[in-house]
Length: 397
Image (cartoon, rainbow, N blue to C red; front, side):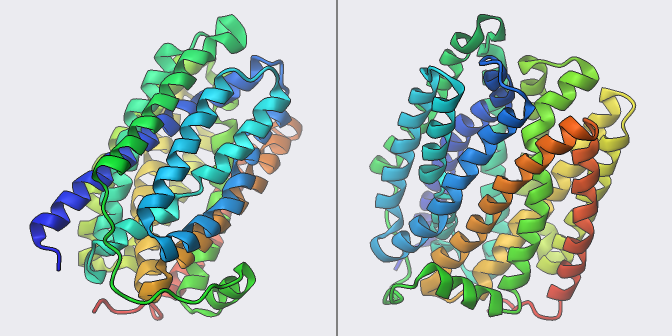
C-alpha cells in the first residue's frame, strides 16, 4: 500500500513528465501557422495542419487509453512520447507542406496519450480529490505553455523560410525526449489492484459512455466547446497578423503570459472552487467566463482589449476542463477510467478535426473575426448541458 510520501513522489514525477512534454507541444503550436506559410500555404492549408494532427489524435486516444488499462500506463507513455520526439525532428526537415501534413497526422496518433496521463493521475488520487489534482495537472500543462511558446517565438526565424523553424522544432523534440527519459527513469505503476475489464470495441464503449447521465453530457460539452476553440487556435496567428501585424515572437510572448495565468488558476483556484461550490457549478462558471472572453476578443478594437478577452478565456478553461475531467473520472468504473477518459479525449480530437476546417472557411470567406463569434455561440448549449449535470453528478465517496 502506498504511503503519503510515495503519493507525493509519484505526483511530482508525473507533473515533471507533463511539463516537459507540453513544453515541446507548446513550442510548436504557435509556430505552425507561420511554418505553413513558409511553404506558401493558403489559410485553408494552414488550418489543415491542425486538423491532420487531430485526425491522428482521434484514432490514438481510445486505443492508448484502453491499452494503458490493460498493460499499464508506463509502457504506453514510453512508446508514445518517444515517437512524438521523433516526429518533431522529422517535421523540422519536412520538404513540403504535404509531407508536413503526413508528419502531423502521425504525431497526432502518438500524442493521443493525454487520457493515459489522466489515468495515471487518477490512479494515485482518491476520488474526492481528483478535480483538484486534475487542476494541478492542468497547471503543469500551463507551465509547459509558459516556457514552450516563448522559446519557440524567440528561436523562430520566419525570414529564412522553412529552415527558420528547424531549431525550435528540434528543441521541441528534445523536450519530448527528456520527458520519455523521465518516464523510463522515474515513473512507476500505481494502478488500483482490480482485474482489467474485458476488451471493448470502440462502439460498445461509446454506447456505454453516451448512456451514462454524467459522462454523456461531459463528452458533449467537450466536443462543442472544443469545436469552437480549436478553430480559434488554428487561426489565431493569422488573425493577430491580420488585425495587429503580429509575428511568431509576439504570439509566443502572448501565449507565455496566458500560460502563466492559466498555471495560477489551474493550480490554485480550480480545486478550491470545486471543493467549495462543487464540480458542476465550477464547470458552469468556467464556461460562462469562456463565452465572455471569446465575445470580447471578437469585438476587440485593440490588441490590449483582445488580451483581456484572452485572459477571460484562459481563466474559464482553467475552471472548466479540470472539473469536467474530474467528473468523468468519478463517474467511470475504476477499471474503465482510461477508456472513458480516452473516449472523451477522442471526442475532443474529433472536434479538433472539424473546428479548424470550419474556422479556415469562416476566416477566408466571412471575416477574420468570425471564428470567435461562432465559438462564443457554441458556449451557450455547453452551459445548458453543464447545468443539467448538477442533479446527476455522483457524490464523492
